[in-house]
Length: 306
Length: 306
Image (cartoon, rainbow over all chains, first blue to last red; front, side):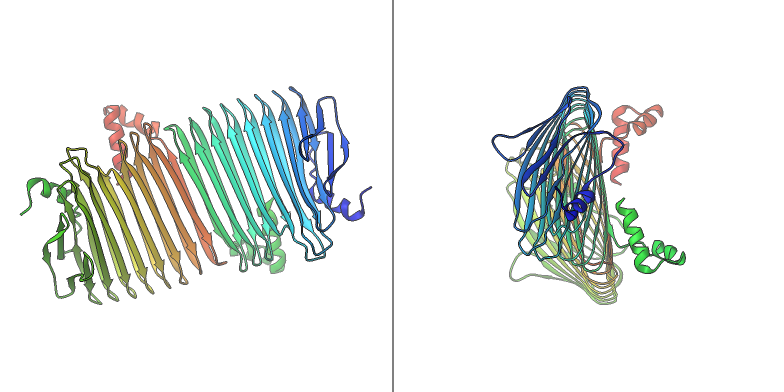
């Protein structure tokens, strides 16, 4: 059912974790083409707009849902709304991601709007990988929007990864953390050529003893441009930490604008950011081991984005 | 000529350095009231608007200019434009500052717009202290704007200090650094009650091997609010570092929004920020030495804002 190229693209955005995959929904060129469900994980097509509702039964453990999206045509403009209800005390992995192969000169775009309700004491691991390729001049555009409401004691780990080939992305992530809720966001972003990437992450620490951490790493090559807006707001006794590191190369441009706001005397917020080029010491060390400059550079970037 | 209260206010914003004070201009309630000049440092009243032009002869060393402003009446709205031309190879200290004693219920405001041209290889140390007091309900408002152009090899150290009593401040600082120019900005800000403080610092690293550092420390008590916008833009091979720390107490609010932008592959920019409350370990340590909680707190804040 999938062509060789489609399989390649799917492979690039897939993630192998050691958690059994029990539910599955594949969307291709704007339509659901394959689905698998389970007694604990149901997937229902939305009535009012394109997209699915995913329900994880309370107490579900050690199970995963994969919901890849692939686009293999030029001129596709796909918008999808997916909702996730993560039941109390469950512990699940959701692997999303979008891969585009654009063979033509017309643009292909996927906008995925994902909203999550993570109920009491649930643990969600969410991975989202973006990848694009294509022979033509058609732009590959991915605009994910992710909204998370994490209730008492909930714990969310998010991995947001843009591997390569995406011409334009505007990511928006909005999170509200209630009492004792925890969040760790890991962002990895790579741009090259004239690609542009923008990432907005807003985290509201609403509840007592909530905590959040953003770890963002990126590499900007060629004439690409990246801009980061992080906003962490402490409204209660809470702890927040933003850490962003960017490697800049060639004629690329990187801007990092992290805001921290303490609106409570027991809010503890920290931010660190660094933008700079590849460490020349690291380069020299790898080159002394026999690697060419280009190989050494690739090795360092690979390690940095791991 | 100065009343006892005026002398007190002047004292609060003065700064004793071990550099001979050779030139002086005192402004009181919107008028220049006293002036002293020197063969190397001249002060000329502007023709087109209120304010002075200060000229430092090239090669002037180990001399200082003090230009305090005091306001001792309610209902004063003083705007002043001061320009400074710091000659090549000179090494000078400029002490500005504004002290308000507002005895009434009408507001008193001072807006000082200072622009500096720091010529080749000159070293400028610039200190600006703000202080206000008063029995009435009249607001004490201070809005300084500082514009610096630092030419090849110039070095500027700025100290921007708001001691206490200022109800509202909006500080704006804009700096352009040319080849090999260096800047160190030290900001200290204290707010209490319903005071509001906003600080904008924009630094453009234009020239090769330019470098800049912002070290900002603040304490927000009561219901006061502080907001910081820092913006460091690297347009060449350069190094920039922003470090901001805030102590938050009571029902105060602090927001820190530092932006770093690397528009050159050899721009190296770093930012660190932390907002939190007084370290309880430090408090306990000082209290174990016999200090009351209040005394210990004051001791810590004093040390932090030093």
